[in-house]
Length: 66
Image 1 (spheres, rainbow, N blue to C red):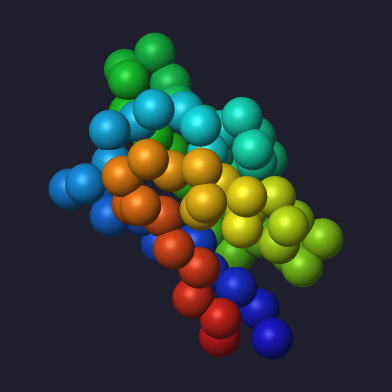
Image 2: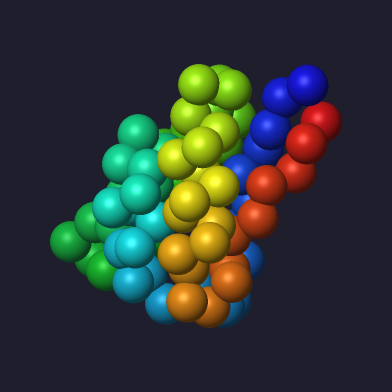
């Protein structure tokens, strides 16, 4: 099973808490926007991505298992 990271950009405030949890997957750049660096990270990053989902104050991030 693989996972896909989904961000609701209409809700996201680019707080960067996800980037703290999983910098391999998320990045807030100088333009103050969130970028997903890897939409389908490997299972080795699942714990970090799940932590990023939990930390998001706007609940804008989700994981879809495919």
